[in-house]
Image (cartoon, rainbow, N blue to C red; front, side, top):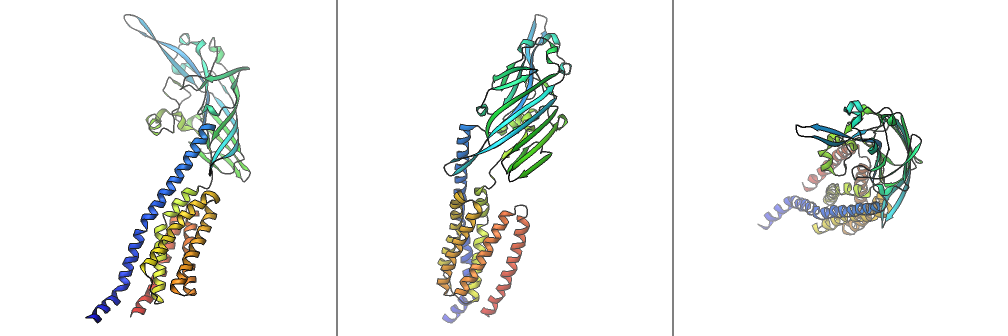
Length: 447
């Protein structure tokens, strides 16, 4: 009977041990889950630091205008009396040219880097004859003395000087109006002759953070943007027609015509307007008339986000643990060594601690260097441990080579985002082939 039991155990011990190792891989997903939560917490702290610094400096900036606003009266005749209702008509410029130079400034809140900027923006352009007939507005109903021009800047806290607008040779100083009107200045018009062939220009000294956008309100809008920041991310409704990016900075030029946008050159009241695109619900509700959705510009972002790459690397934790355990299992089986499951667990804990080490160091040294340091420390610890339990330098070196291959493989996938699926599939196929090859030696050993 005892001989029979020993025979069953001899034939089944590899299967039982394989089951235990698989169970360990599943159990190690619990600490991996908490590591993911830790990364999300640290990333949220970074966002809070950015928000706090930006709130004291200025937020993302979106520049719109100038736009002419003409209030007028509309009369409703009834059998009893004649009622007047006040409306406002808005007219956009025919030509608009924007030249902007952005100077980046890096600030720190504790260990977190925040991207700020100062911008010199020059607006220039012209209005041709205002097409009142398109909105069917009678000249006698226009309230000429209430006409005004407006320029909208998403965060006026970033204005470092008064905004003066040169308007056909005279200076208009814009000041805050109603919340939905931005910065305005009265035009003091007397007749339709005062709104023919208008030329304007303005210099804006502006501060902001992370992003600078422009809304193409001109029938023809040209935007030239340059900066010393070498890592722009162009965003918005259209991409620039020309770009030049180098280590010394970038230049970009956009050309937008009226047929490329979703709003006309003139409208009444709230038919179109600027709605906060950060408020998703409001933006979606007013998507058909939200001119802010046609904005374009650049993000001055920090190119390496260690938290995102660390989170991506954690997603490969199961793969790293599984491949390491499979290699360890094959090495001990082929070489007739016996490793306790508790020792497998210790190696698994070391593989999980790799990610906490990577996260903490990357907050100071950047992701790539931190990955190398964390890999060296983890592989060195496991190699030292394996050499002690297997009492073999050769086997320890063999497992070290396997770990170096695994971590190099994952690092390459993280760097090649566009080809990660292709590389991952090929790598796993090769790994499976290697495991199948060495697994043949197990059956030979056991027979």
